[in-house]
Image (cartoon, rainbow, N blue to C red; front, side, top):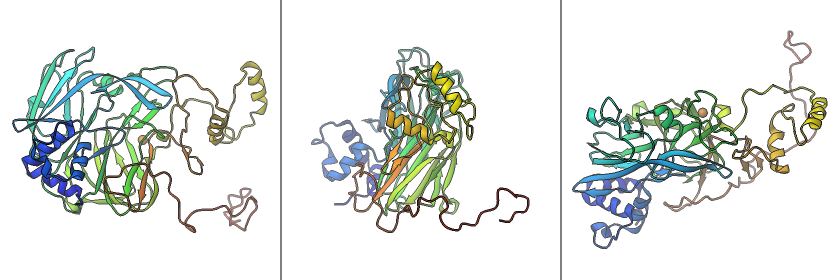
Length: 447
Ligand SMILES: [Cu+2]
């Protein structure tokens, strides 16, 4: 039996049987004694993984307690890796930053236990969720802060669906800067028109992790040096693996300090929803770039075309890893003489940038140049045809024909069919007869 996501959500949303099965499967408890055995194996596998795929992340298992879906979040310090070669002590939930995704269905009664294992008070605000004032999680306003060692219980009924987030409202400048945040996906009850075949979720964030240090600096307001999808930088961000022709939804949330124009290649996607739920179809917009503002969430949907398609923030510095932003501009300068003087003073020193920064990446890659401890190359990614010139907020939608419905394994790089790929036709800079304006007489405007 082929199980679509629609039928999974219908099962989860309309039957206690479905929700109980989700919880049991997710916790890995014995299935034999539960009615879930009536469900097919593919449904159980997908339910165990959660129906949303959180890039590089996970969905938190829950347990059913007398009709209440109970989650348990633990606020704690975590050892986090941004990409191999760059780690930091961050704060997150249940061993990860961002914390695990909470998934529930409109109409569910949920209880979230929050244990504070941090050295200072915290709280959790359920960002965008409609709930009683006393459950809103603003420490000092809606509740006393959760002290170190304490556990609080939040409990409310979900009266909406959509893409939501959670984060502290206690010393949030510090706590969010070091990673405390997660997603809270509320699936619609019943099935959706234009049903979704696969869906992904990620949070946008920024970090000030200075090279050679191991704690993100919470005092920084503008000069961040790591830009992440779910706490990872490219090339450590997972690809979005989809079957060509599938309808894909990507749920994106932003709890960083910048707005991020997220751009997808090869498609006109539709912006179909937010923390306000899935919008009426008349409000869907066709776009190729969508700004996800700070504190906002956006859902984009598209029917996947075969290929490898970049998905990235369009702020060009946000597709870079650690780099200085106050450096002198040597683009176009003759720095050969200065390089000789510098080499005498600082053996191994290499000044770069006179011809652009492309060489920088080649040098790092080819010569194995050792930078400061615990940092990453500015442009860290390599594709099938060479350096990608990007790091940070960049990943690839990999759409392939014929994938099984629950196959998310990385299929490798796309092999473009013959005659559908750009190719070199000359190595002569004087090639051809291009029409150009004369640089010598710009005022005339003619060549
Ligand atoms: Cu950005």
